[in-house]
Length: 121
Image (cartoon, rainbow, N blue to C red; front, side):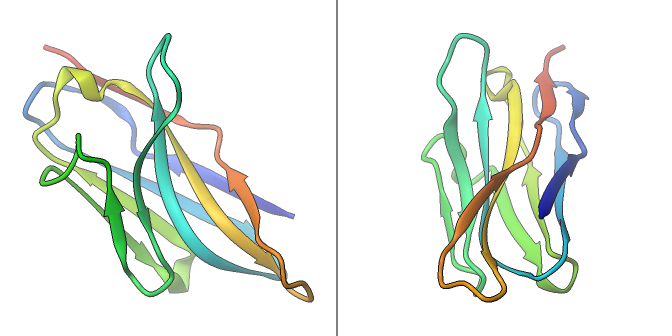
């Protein structure tokens, strides 16, 4: 059983910064890719950024140059540094992790409950 817990959301002015964190906890698992999605009211959930276990990254075009995803494998934690925030970045941000339980050859996808990011003056 694996649980993902996000933190770091809040209210920030346009042009400001926030850093989100997501830690995977549990036992008998290995974490592969991790990432962030977001969902604004009335819109579909969309991919923001992903990072592989080896540190390869992928970003949505809308956040390239402003957001940076990173991870600490020893802590099973993924981060999202968000700079130059815009009102359109306002959304609930969800952590996602690709998990391989010990003793299997299959990946299972887990989601956190989300953390609210609001960009407003």
